[in-house]
Image 1 (tube, rainbow, N blue to C red):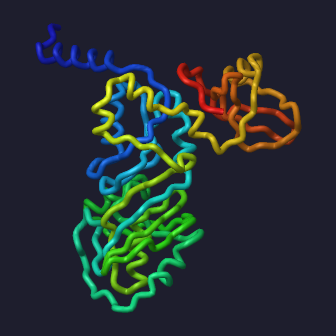
Image 2 (cartoon, rainbow, N blue to C red; image 1 turned 90 degrees about the vertical axis):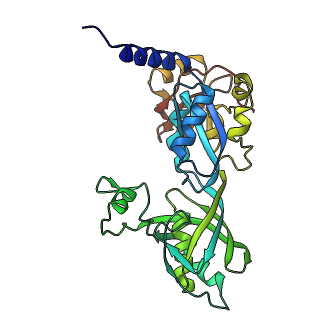
Image 3 (cartoon, one colour; image 1 turned 60 degrees about the horizontal axis):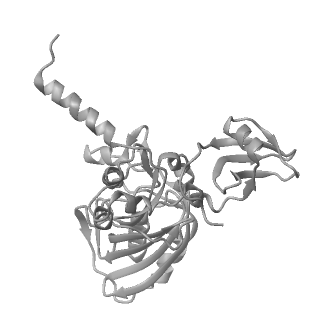
Length: 320
């Protein structure tokens, strides 16, 4: 059967697109702009690098800006470990009104007067530590297999299921009338929008998030981030030079050194016997050049088992 000219053109375009992508390994500390979803931002960055494989390490809402670590190639294998990392934000909110999304992207559903004498610290204190938090109705998490925001957009009557999260730090930076700036440090799964909503309810006037910037994600506590404009102005070699080796994303894990023979066994998924009995739930096995071979666990008998293996990655080695 003869193919139409449109079908042939589409096939050629797909082939050119596939040829344009390449194998890239490493981590980019990307400064996500406001207005893009995390996936939209990821795809823009991926195309700038021409990377065949890429993933991000924890979503930011379109309203939010700041650090979004992007993993390429072999580094995508550690994205799941970074998802659970501690994160820090600067959050801005306005008192006196609530929205259906708990942020300024939504519709105002209630307004209340803001009391003159507010004890803001009394509203922050109960939200520190391990708390039970109700996620926003407009959220990507799923309930019975369906994303909450899809249920909300369909007009369904439902209540998100509360879940335990951990807030390591929640402090007032400054106040300007009805506007607050907060410093938030929290664990995985915490919604800053929900924290702001709950602060407003405790104060009795309501509140919603107006701006959010992620300033760091463990282990990148002092990140040098790069914007879309900065990346777009560079050539490909300059962009590649910005990539961190994937080992840096696992800097918090204890390292164990392996020789060439042990490296080969681990890359084949085989077990080893450690030189000393020391149970470690998760460690990074490193070769003689300081490159990551595998994530391993060591039991009390000294047996080393592979939890996640990695292929050899060319390029610069991590710093000592």
